[in-house]
Structures are given as C-alpha cells and as structure tokens.
Image 1 (cartoon, rainbow, N blue to C red):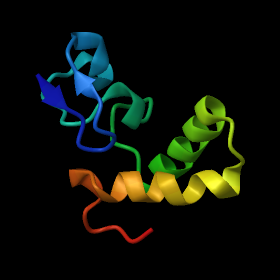
Image 2: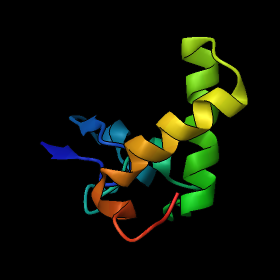
Image 3: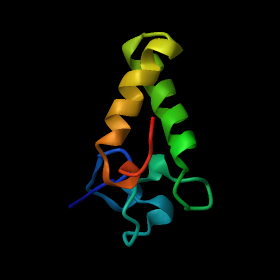
Image 4: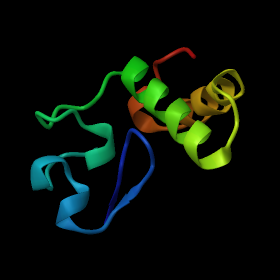
Length: 81
C-alpha cells in the first residue's frame, strides 16, 4: 500500500490513483484532470476548502492548519507556507 506524498491518504485500490495509474506517488484527490499533480498553491487551497467543509471553520482560520499539515508531507518539504 502506498501513501499519497501530497496529502497522506492511503492508496489501497486502483481508483485511488490518478487515471488508475499505480505508478503515481499521489492520489486522485491531489491530481488535476489530466493526471498531473496539483501545485502547492492548488493543494493548499483545496486543503483549506476541505477543512472549511468538514470542520465548519472559516477560510482564514483553516489556512494555518492546512499549511502546517502540508508542510509535513514529502511533496511539500521545500515549500514555505
């Protein structure tokens, strides 16, 4: 089982991979429609949206925990929040 380098999601089935390509190190939620990986700004924005939707917090409050979470993941080690 692989873990997504961009969000940490376990990838346990073929549908978890972009375009069902198991050679990808990132999941379907971190991919663009063409199968390429989202950029850091795209992923940060999507993570903020996810926190707003699932935690019920406002966008500004969600930005810091989203950036902190992403900073711990391999894909974003060189990024600065």
